[in-house]
Length: 418
Image (tube, rainbow, N blue to C red; front, side, top):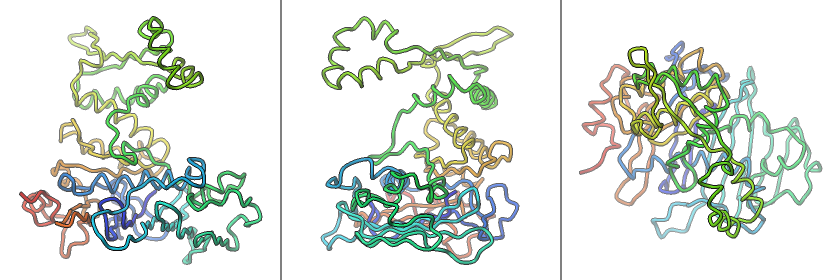
């Protein structure tokens, strides 16, 4: 569960910006929040608003980067590889390091404080501390300054447990520890379970391979998706999904030239995996006057297709107690349905494991359903510097204010300057 993320010198963000999901005691008992072990409450959903090119997607990219860097950077490349991110570029000042401060909480109610400072060449500093439920003080687990590593009492490992070969200037120390049998960081790694439609380069437009695989092999998920699609007035009562090995599909089996080109480009093992992967034939069932009619999935509206893509991702995150980081949640979906998607995260029956949604959105009307501590804005100035700030940062903002009217009139910023 995420508490907050602060970043600087990241993509279009030059100076520090903080997305905070922390709410005080005033939201005790509010289903949109869940209690934290260190006091206060944490929002189950947070929505970022802002003009086009103001930095919304760039901020979300930081979640994808951190999840990858913390868990996989050691395996991703050798010691000479540059770290794949873009610092702020629009100035002639000496380049500062890129920094992150991340606060998360695991299912055992331990709160973690992670810091990272790095360039594209190497990690300058990195640290992790923890505060267990019922305690008032943090304890350090590890810290590093360049190539100098330090561990602390009770951290669950010694530096002698780690071969020198796993310590690498361009990789997270945590990702290096994952190369061993040590499990001392498992609690923190649990909080980094992120599903997202954003990678290092931006939004991923189509990801239905995952969704159709889940729907084909997870009957309970498919039934829940069908129930939701019906309640959303899509006209769909059932989804039919047939699976087939790619090699058994005539379009692939009969095209020897294509297979040969794939073999030349990618080599045998990848061709084998490709040809043995599943392809999906999806049809939707509509009940009219007691008669069932089927349609190819491609004949459904773009909005219905988007619902079929996003609902399995939401249900998977809810089941796992993970975090869904999603760019442009409203894409193709009617505004009246957006609150229903958020309410899945507020439902005690659907969200039993502390799952969260962090998303961007252009549909201002969704603000009517949000607390001020769930709303963030991005804005870019004339020097092309992005800034993210919370609605709760403003003085004298009340939850009975008309957030939508004030936002659209420019009171909070985050709208195009036309």
